[in-house]
Image (cartoon, rainbow, N blue to C red):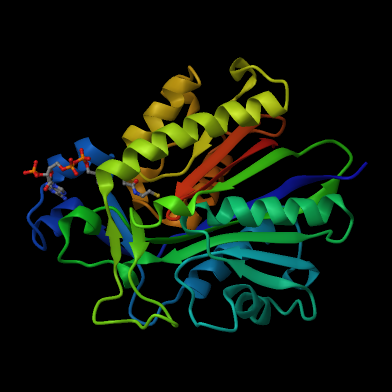
Length: 318
Ligand code: COA
């Protein structure tokens, strides 16, 4: 039986940094408020002209290097983003053109902050059924382009970045399970108010009912982690690491409490880059792999939640 395993990880953040103190000069907020309510201390913002695919290319090349593969070896690209460079071609195809792996499937999924989880789940299925052997899974965003920098309720939260993993076939499981969910009933709580068919309007920016998003996120992520463990017949004590969506430290802490996990076993990077949506889980994973916390053989629970709402989990033997 074929399984998929993570052969390499990579990430990239744009050079420009905006600290909470910088934001104090832009909107009526304070470093103290942002840190205590969200855990965020700084975020990275793309330079003028720097695009989602630019960030993704760095992350993808790092993941391929870590896997010992050349860009031309990739035979499948799944790309999660809600901030694409173009309406079409999709970001997967634009990345493929740069990597030079011609003729292989390349697509993007726009499931907001759960974009990487959806892309990972699809790629895992293709590797497991033998149709892909070196699948590149990317989450990348330039949310700064759809952030209203005069709205303090969202400007302090969202930012830019990219993360990637390479999946390869293995004889032992790797990705043990993925679970995906969506509930469009909640579409008005977190959305970007414009698009091609509706028109872009004067302001193409993120709108969010923060308090309500918070409550649903905590509930759904709690159910998602239970679901992942139950599907694998595992107790929460079996987990080595929680690698959560990096949106808000209080949501992360709530999920850790649900799992009875000490925060030392939770990968937290939100302070460094804010909410980078589809990029946040692969970014956090790459940081913890590269700094030596996550080791081969560790059992990881990945989860993310985002606009739609969309959410999902992956249980992974690294
Ligand atoms: N600086 C200072 N004050 C701010 C502020 C900011 N950046 N943003 C909001 N406030 C104010 C509000 O206006 C409100 O003031 P009021 O009491 O005078 O009306 C007060 O702070 C409390 O606002 P509230 O929205 O209740 O705060 P909160 O504790 O819920 O925290 C969030 C706000 C956005 C941090 C929190 O709701 C959250 O993280 N939600 C989830 C967001 C998220 O993760 N979204 C992405 C999911 S993928």
